[in-house]
Length: 417
Image 1 (tube, one colour):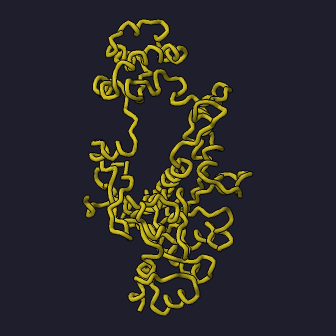
Image 2 (image 1 turned 90 degrees about the vertical axis):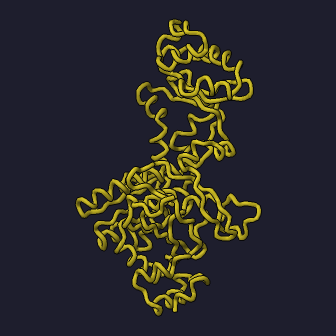
Image 3 (image 1 turned 30 degrees about the vertical axis):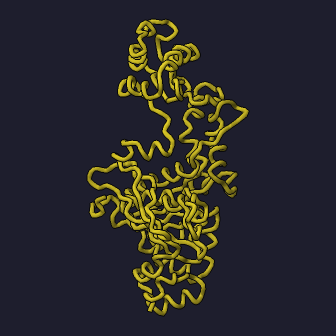
């Protein structure tokens, strides 16, 4: 991996006041592109550290796999923001920062005296982002503003669970934490848009992201269907409303995903199946006809796919019609696509020195490639380094530690003197 390459966010300083997944995922995207992300943690550390997954021999269990993934390329600083001394140090860091990201409950930063208005008065070019379950007052004062939320709550109230699963009686949460990661993506996008504007005008702004809003934004079926027809869409399993065939189909030895909903794709599929006459069948004449007659579509398609293995279907349809086998984790780690695209980079586990895999960077920039070059930090691993950069001398570092405002890791004690 070319760690010397220029990166798009080199020179950008981020003060990261986030825990759990949504906020750290957001700031990891910035760190991957070269931003100096200072992760400010309480003395106990981000609670995501203790959530796993862990290998059987991971001890102590304070450095889980999700934490490792969402906090790579960052530096960790311990500050107990309940202490006024810690808040004063944080203000010094923010004076030189470009971006602040936080996901505290609504009102916490106000009580700390670290709200956007206060920080913007000190640093007018500051981009300040918050990620909460239902947002903050800047984007519109939700009646649920003070409600706590997790991924499953955002998926439920953002509409996604109402269209996921096989029937309305059994709503299903999407298997990954999209109620966290999608808000993190939207926050990163909003931050970069605001940063661009700040570079142009010298004036920063507040980026207000609600987890529920972000989930709704990707639940296009919910809004589009009800907004245009007044109908409430429900779960369709693996299908997509208005498209057929667009589902999993049966093979001799399993299932695979197949989509051929538009006329050119349907014609290619019919030809490969040896049934070109299907193109002229009035039940299947248009995209909409195939949707209305989707039971007949799937009867025809599955009757053919069941006569072949998954491997045979991939061989005869690959490159002609959109399809793909259902890859599990072991399949993905063995697949040449993800290896070629560097989507499974490794970092070193700090406790045992073992190489562990984290998800790679999906946005491939030709001139300023991002890199995963640094493992997630231990709690407070860079406390002394960062505070020295901020101008604190030995006496100030010692006073902060004595006041309980920070914790100096034993590995860094020698660097305080």
